[in-house]
Amino acid sequence: MKYSIVVPLCNEQDSVPELYQQLRSVMEATADDFEFVFVDDGSSDQTFSVLEEIANCDDRVVLVRLRRNYGKTEALVAGFDHASGDCLVAMDGDLQHDPHDIPLFLQKMDEGYDVVCGCRVARPGDSLLLKRIPSKVANSIMAKLTGVKIHDFGGGFKAYRADVIRQVPLYGELQRFIPALAATYGASICEVPIRINERRHGKSHYGFGRLFPTLFDLITIPFLLRYISRPMHFFGAIGLAALASGSAIAAWLFTELLAGMNVAEAHGPLMFFTMILILAGLQLVCLGLLGEMHVRHFHLSNAARRDSGVLRVVRKQ
Image (cartoon, rainbow, N blue to C red; front, side, top):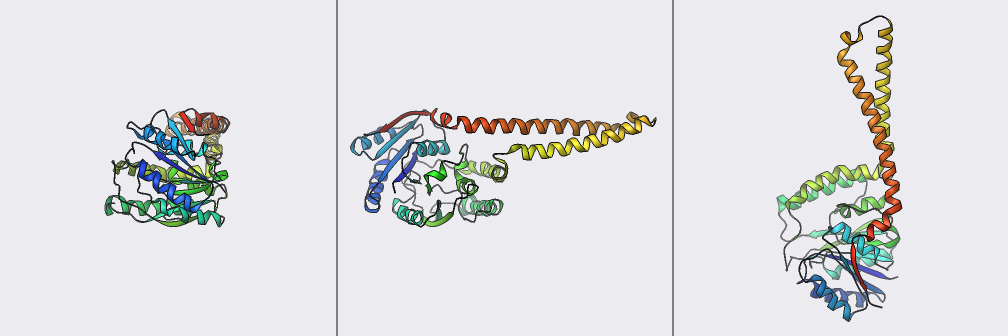
């Protein structure tokens, strides 16, 4: 089995040399066939130059450079697309993820699991009130909503079978919820405990501002798990219910009109509500149809869309 270590990087020029040395040491002692896929996510410092120097000395290094800063999810997708391994290990490039934990992931993959998640058991420097408690609450809620019984959805240290991860559509901030999305494809999932080191170089790319996107994801992800490939089943069901209710009320009002009642005077508010129900129902049905068209378009053009942001790929022959 060939292993690909996929690392998205943004302004991590000081961390790259030590990260590479640790990764090389661990993988040379662990596996015979492997590669390192480093993705420069629009860095404004010398990150890519440092990576090029490393690639010139090691033909196991693959470099992917994005045109601008797309975010971690798109950087991971670019790395996954250009990785040739059967097993893909994704980790952060700031040295907070310890490369010496990689064998734990590979052991679980050898046991037959499709997705192996790193569960952060020690997080030095994290505020109890601002990070640890909100994270624990969010992970608990997500586990109940998705039915995936893991304790750490947000960690970026994970391993995937290549044939599984390439089935999962990723965009926005969905990289944090890959296990939940992969579960819909029948993936077997487990956790391993990992250590988190203190950040030694640069500044963290994450802050309190991530709290609100996480709250939105708690609503979005359960919806996506049920209706990501069939939006008409959600919008169409509500729309048809509204149409049926509005039509039934309209039919009753019409019979009252035929009986000689002044419907506008006697049931003015109800007439207005009926019109809203019918119009809203039509709009929801149309929205469901548009969603179905968008899903089809997404799957047809997915490969082309993923390559559009890649500026350069370096793979030494």
